[in-house]
Amino acid sequence: MSAQNSAGIQTLLDAEREASKIVQKAREFRTKRVKEARDEAKKEISDYKSKKDDEFKKFEAEHSQGNKAAEDDASKDADKQIKDITAAGQKNQAGVVKNLLSAVFDVKPVPPSAA
Image 1 (tube, rainbow, N blue to C red):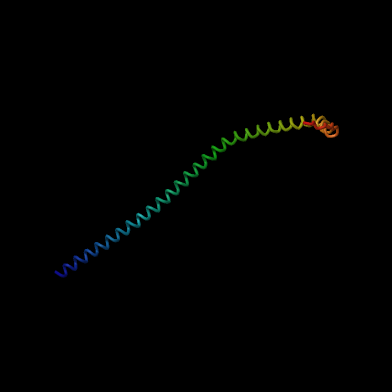
Image 2 (cartoon, helix red, strand yellow):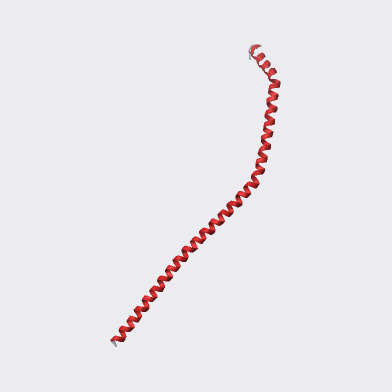
């Protein structure tokens, strides 16, 4: 009976070792699969990000050209207005200087009124 118990115990120990190996392989497989899933997710995120960056650059290029045209128009208008103001200043410069000089040199004092 002792030999039979010993053989049964040995069988149980062998089964336990085998189960331990199966559990270890399952853990290794799970760890490997989690790592693969993480790598796949990183790749998908990277691909999605690059796709969205390309879309944004395309959108920006399409819409910034309209802004550039508006900036050019505004710049042309500003240059025209500056030229008009400069021309008006030069046209009336002599009269303004004459009025300033006459105001400075032709002083007409006024006595204070007694109140």
